[in-house]
Amino acid sequence: MRALYTAATGMAAQELNVQVISNNIANLRTTGYKKQRAAFQDLIYDHVRRVGAQASDQGTILPVGIDIGGGVKTVGTPRLMSQGTLSPTGNDLDIAIRGEGFFKIQMPDGSYAYTRDGSFTTDQQGRIVNAQGNPVQPTITIPQNSSDIVINAQGQVSVKLPGQTTPSTIGQIGLTRFVNKTGLQPIGDNLFTETPASGPPQDGTANVDGFGDMQQSSLEQANVEVVSEISDLIAAQRAYEMNAKVISAADQMLQSTANLFR
Image (cartoon, rainbow, N blue to C red):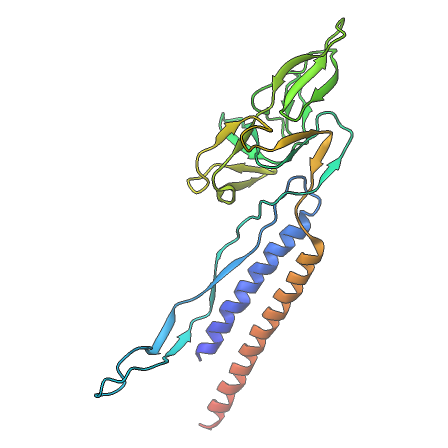
């Protein structure tokens, strides 16, 4: 019976939907995390009677047809790149982006990855690095024994050097944006990489030409809304249960049909 297979596709789709929702909830406190949603489309139809076909020798046309659907399929899990809430941390090297842009990170193999997670620190050389020890681009080194680190809205990094009373600018953190942010490939560790779908990276300066500005001593929180995720979870659970009910009903119908031949 076709209904068994159709309902099975619905159960598989809702199972994936729950997996996406559970990942969003699990990353509720992940810095810079961008939530995902599952997107579905209906499967190909079996056209028993095509709408618009000729219905008689007199040329009458069928106003409606008979189309039997094959179920549902998952077409993607797009990521929603909306702004997350900024939370103050008190750490001089924590930076949040308010608006467009990603921090550019140089990976160990020389390639680049991109992130909204601005929880930075310094390594043994004094370079500003992310949690995995990969340097932020352009590479900026905090001089030894310097103090009063200041990062302005454009990403300029200033410090007070020993024996000096005025701050010295030692570099500028850049930002990168993409034509299609949702086309970036997540690789874990709060990092994304460029893909043909995202378009090439466009490097620039914060607070200039449409790039967002930087907020020192703050971090961007995940854009996950708990109430929305819980309501989506309940809806997915009910949809799964209804598809399971269809399978149960189809089984009972098959059983009744089989009993006729006993």
